[in-house]
Picture 1: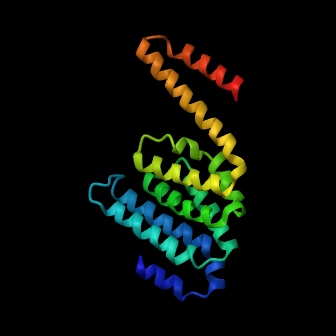
Picture 2: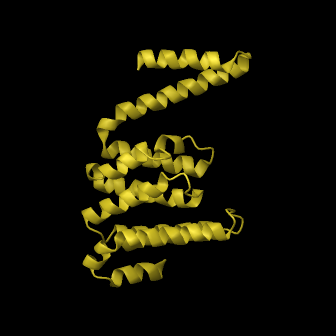
Picture 3: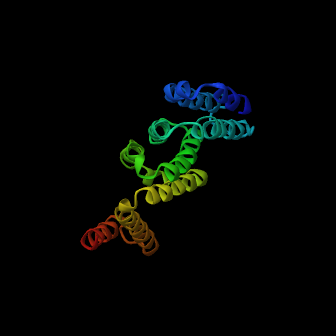
Length: 196
């Protein structure tokens, strides 16, 4: 990771700006290759080390040295990778952790990244409901940064989140009582739409 940061540090800023999307794609490709080489398991711990190294290279090597325009392109690229269904868990975690930092820094400038996160193949709200704890936490942190960057999206995101929570509560109650899940969920969703 330090060697990558040193290489990026030796590049002129104009060159780094021009090739930033390619460099992001290469770093994420290295992480994807490390995950595939392990067969998707994290038993050896090498996947965690690779993710931390790539995350450090993205943050210290690129993110801190790029201009606002370069950071915006980097955020868009990371959002595209994070919202892609084919992205492995480790890659998505790295992308979300870097997006969290970039969204806090860029604020309203990162509109393209926001759109990809909210309307991509795998929206951020679906990642926030992931059964994988680390992915869920990274998605929630990114969602928090997104709301800080775009306060106008707070109410719609909160409404969607509350509707999902109500549906989950109705499903749990229906399973507990033995009632059909479909009827309880339909009634709760109908109520949520009337209220929301």
